[in-house]
Image 1: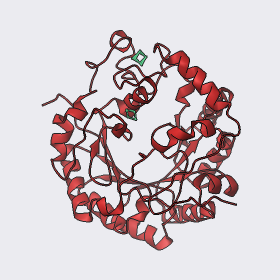
Image 2: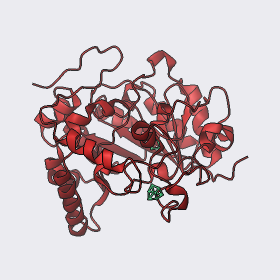
Image 3: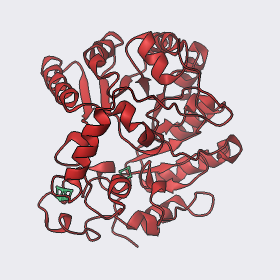
Image 4: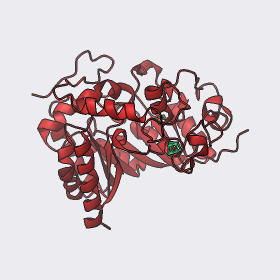
Length: 370
Ligand code: SF4
Ligand code: FES
């Protein structure tokens, strides 16, 4: 049995189905089909097990969780298990009536994603005509019902200039928090690095905008910010450290230490259909593979920051250095850092690179906006 502490948060990926086709989607290339998704009773059991394990916050995600017809039942089940429930949604698929049902079922919080601050940008990036207008309607209902709201914007080379407007929109919608995440290149997004990589100037400008807005809006709006890590000198503390505070459950029940863990081919992941959640968390080889610091190589193993960032992101180390136990190449101490900087500059300079939209199952061609 490992010495791990209980997790605080669980991300339940209820479905991979999604009406949008965002090129920055970080879901894996192979998506779970609808007939593989856990049913209502199985999810209900998983929520109870999560609460028993010590999980406090449940993030209901996807794909688009509103694609699940039983979403209200799932929220009710999670609340009955004693979990704080947060719905992460694009808003597409939510009607006013459905939102009121979710409110009655006890939904605690909504996180609404923003693909752009204008219809042209949002509909192009989401690959969904009319999506922005629908989202604005949903935002109005959310405000009228009184859900606590976080706005969630993924920023990249095409829309980073809209960051100040995104912050204003969060205020106008009555959001208490905005999450501004520069695009992370996992899953589908990896093939869009030429089209989406911000320039170094954009990354620095975003740093300045966030810094200024945090001062100006102190006490009114919390700004969570994930900077462009390919342009950084030190990596992010991914998942707060592997197997330390959170876990993800895929639509078909695999339990993962992080969103992109299936890109680590040497690890095998267990399912809630085969083993209790607590055993997977504490005892599975995958969760123990990169816990703590014992697994580290140099330069991480003797670095003073090793319990600050835990060597960065294991999935990024795998994707960029070919070794999941390597120092994340974002780190200035990594032997791959210089090559990554060169590649980052080349991606950012690929001016006419086309977007490759996420193609969901049953949808052969995304529907680009006009
Ligand atoms: Fe973090 Fe490893 Fe870089 Fe040190 S060497 S800063 S622990 S990634
Ligand atoms: Fe897997 Fe960072 S996304 S460890």
